[in-house]
Length: 192
Ligand code: PRP
Image 1 (cartoon, protein in one colour):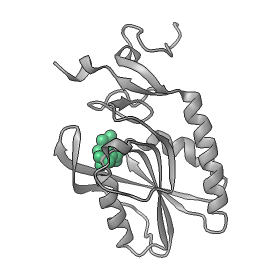
Image 2: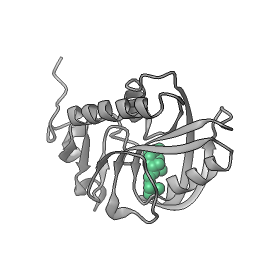
Image 3: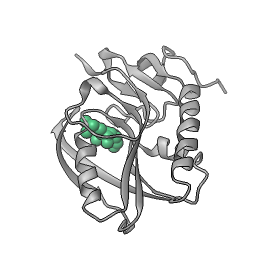
Image 4: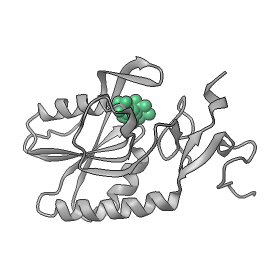
């Protein structure tokens, strides 16, 4: 059996559509180690419920949660943003709601990326209306140049340039989520 290519450019693999690797699996792992330790320290007296936003946050949640050495709970929401394909509009619909009552709970939202910030802005307002004790955000990636709303984010893995990124949960047309790193998608893949 041949080895899985770990560098962009190999033919017949998702790696071939990657222009360059922005964050390696090792860089991501190291940063999540730091964030997990920080979160465990900050929430030592008040273990949070981790709320992952499907589907992109699956990888971050899986890896981050195992680095938070506390008795945490985990739940998921799926939301759909009405937008023009790649741009979100801020109008959000709940596809899957929490199964947990978060009244009086400490909530930590786990996201893969904050782009315009519109999805998260809506989600924060929605969750805050349910009477939690606190709501904070942990995101692996943030694109400061794309921000359309200002959001106070407590934990940020990396600020990245405003490029089309895929991998480690992030998709283009539902593909590439399984790449172990975050890479920049080749323009030829999404432009004619
Ligand atoms: C992505 C990401 C965030 C949102 C960020 O989800 O996971 O939830 O977009 O964009 P914004 O800051 O511009 O609102 P997406 O809607 O692509 O769904 P997915 O997680 O299933 O890929």
